[in-house]
Length: 215
Image 1 (tube, helix red, strand yellow):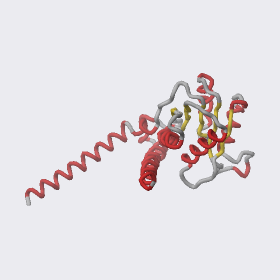
Image 2 (image 1 turned 180 degrees about the vertical axis):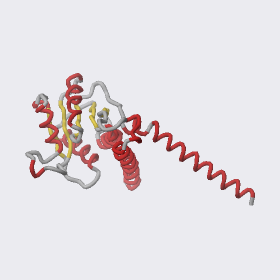
Image 3 (image 1 turned 180 degrees about the horizontal axis):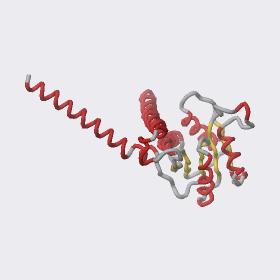
Image 4 (image 1 turned 30 degrees about the vertical axis):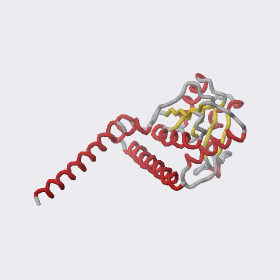
């Protein structure tokens, strides 16, 4: 009986330590883990997720101008709000028009809408981009993706998964304007953004692992 008690205490201790470790990880490292910064210096194409906050498009233009990019490609599916009163029906097209309005060269800009999907929207944009490269026989060595802060790691995962292994994939992130990334848990909006994104990233890794094991 005493041995059993010690076993239970040991299990309780492991659970407590695990929970404590997870809490500390979330407190100090979760935001930086999700908001991955891992870009490459000689990418041929800059991909921009069209749902970026509008204020970040200036940073997109600056990144393109200081890099060695051939094209800037905006991606995104159908608008979920406002399509009935807008000339644009997709996030990719709306982002492209915004960039041109800010002074970006339209000849170097490509809007690449992805089809509607109720889930796996990031994976769908990655597949759409891959198919566009193949259809146009574009042989590139590297691509950087400009993502929306905590969404960056999930974006990087899907583009690396679906693009050719010969294409190096980098990612860079915008800065949040509505909360402090070093104290995201003190802000309700920060918590609403960071925690669901962590769950979504774990779900993406789990579902792709299951799919790979079935093949």
